[in-house]
Image (cartoon, rainbow, N blue to C red; front, side, top):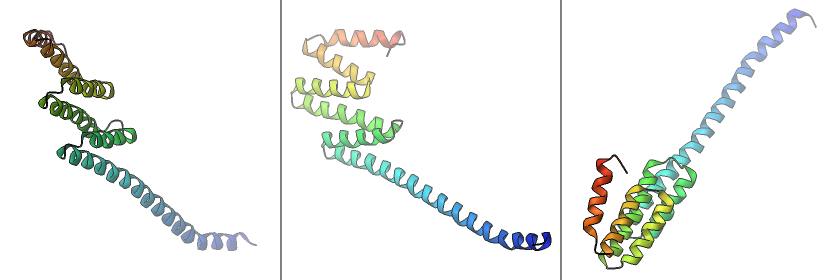
Amino acid sequence: MSRHNKDKRVNRLLPVKIMIAVVALTFLFSAGSVVFGKKADTSLESVSLGENYISELKYKQAIAEYKAELSIDPKNETAKEGLLNSYVEWADVAVDTGNITLATEILRAGFSETHSTDIMWRILELSFNGMGMSDMYEQAREGFRMFGGF
């Protein structure tokens, strides 16, 4: 085969190779967007379910949804906030019904999950109030604020 015929054959195959490359890249991009799109949809769905559960006062289910989302995307700030709110609102319901022990247990579980200083302060507030020392709690909290504490 002469060089001229070889060049013609290569030139004829070039459009086919380009078309195969375009189809392959299109497939890869569309597959990637489906995978990432599903993750985003799943994330929005979990957060939405969590919010619905909170509004229905189903705190255990809300917590489970937010924890599931955070196991997939640990940096999801909306899920972190939802998890924190689930624990706090559930504890508030327990306080409103007079069950301070349950509220404290809920907040401790929430603190171990979130490490939130807000939850820590709620635990301290319940403890101080339970001992009839709510004034001391307020003074301690104000002192920490004044000195840039948590």
